[in-house]
Length: 418
Ligand SMILES: *Cc1c(COP(=O)(O)O)cnc(C)c1O
Image 1 (spheres, rainbow, N blue to C red):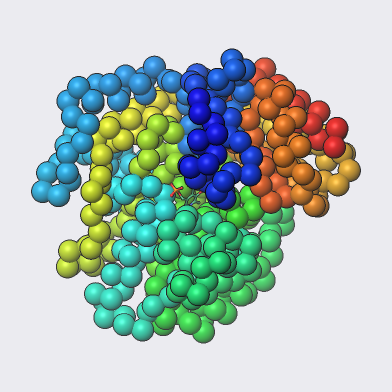
Image 2: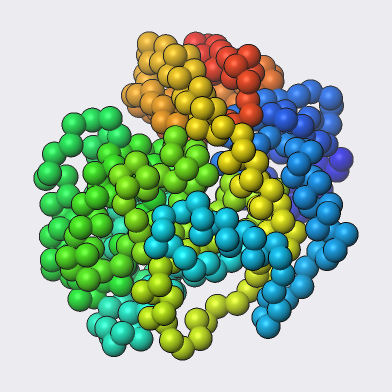
């Protein structure tokens, strides 16, 4: 593989040109393992960024794509439709909360967030709420890299402060600081209440990641924030959008993170694990009030909308998840992560070790040299991608007990050597 060409000519996520460090060449992947060109195998502790929940090269998912490929890889969705899109929409309507009955398929998580924001905005405009022109969100959020999504990412620590001059100015409130298992106090939502009281006439919607703030800092927070947000949004006539692109499909221990609070958003965005990590696809679901409240055409329609290959593999992935006793699996991973990662907190400059569902996080007071950490891990046969002051794992759900122990041992050993 021409790695030098790669480093000189191809951008990788969040990297400079030429690349500061060389990417590892991958030739194949199977189950929880990524195979490198030199023959080494790495256990993937990242699920390729939350997506690859059933592991790589899964026979059922492969077959679903192959079957669809024999019929058609793609056809435009304007004026045409197909079975993979209809079955997938039915499934999503079925497994999400009852009011979420209408589905928009978009190309990626970021575009799904754009669609959700546009949907909420067009709804408000058509209701004659012309003063509404802003969104409200928590700090430390992450919603994607396109402009609309960027505008609701954390304005300071996010990756997008460089573009702040080009972004619409939305309202940011303190990120949720009551942990998932900590004791709830009503004053935690004072700022949310105050901002909604002061600005509800300008606010289209409140948008956030329920229960787990992912790329913004792996913050696991109390489900009562969701309840409070729902109540306050109802009181002040503001829509509520949940970005479950990372948390959806079982990752936090519930099928969707909003189920920790039994709170239903007006708009729900799904992505990442939707296709089992095979292809890019997102889905935006909403209720009848919004779907029917938008009477003019909804102005969005990507070229590859509802791509049949992506819908076919998403159908297979959702079915696999439902038939696989997913909740028992997540509980098993959660228990094991708790047992095996907790000891990392004895290792000196660690701020906290926390686990929720199939997510394990080791947070440092100060970030160590991650390139050193990553070299140790790779030499040991483990693939993780730490960022900020966080070393974290969200393994594929099919990881077995031994493989997970190998992963957590490797984390412990690596941190002991720092
Ligand atoms: C990854 C992510 C996105 C962006 O999705 P892409 O498919 O990378 O565009 C948006 N929101 C959340 C919560 C995410 O984790």
